[in-house]
Structures are given as C-alpha cells and as structure tokens.
Amino acid sequence: MKKILIIITVYLINTMPVLAEKNDCSEMKKLSKEYLTCTAKNIKAAANKKNKQIKEGSAKKTEQIAESTKKIINNVKNKIKKKE
Image (tube, rainbow, N blue to C red):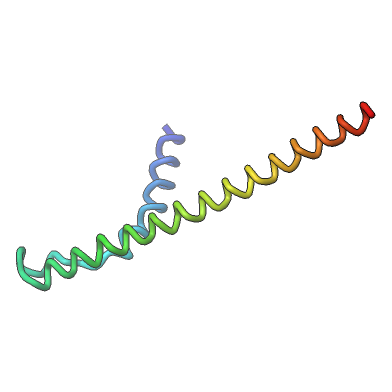
C-alpha cells in the first residue's frame, strides 16, 4: 500500500510542472478568437517541448552508436594486427 502511495505522489509531482506551463483558457468563450489563440499556443508549446525531448534523445542515441561503432572498429583493427 505504501508503494502505491509513493508511486502516485511521485507521478503527481512530475505532472504538476506540465500543468503549470499551460495557459488557462477556461475563462474565455468557446469558439471565440481569444480561446482559439490560447489553445493554439498551448498546443504549440507542448509540441515544441516534445520535439526538444526527441531531439535530445536522438542526439544521445547517435553519440552512443558512434562510440560503440568506434569500439568495434578498433577491436577489428587490433585483431587484424595480431594476425599479421
């Protein structure tokens, strides 16, 4: 039971900053120009944040792949040198 409560609190703490970044559009009339621009800004901000996360993740993965291929190439070179 304690584990479940801990997991829920950690989840809620992590979601609070995400909710804080959104603009509150609930006070505006639906289908008004202001409401549409407000929701568009929220969608744009969320999309930009996700794109940034994807870019960072792909850059990390690319670096890891480059490092591992260098290691493999060096191992092959060392084995060739030993055979000579």
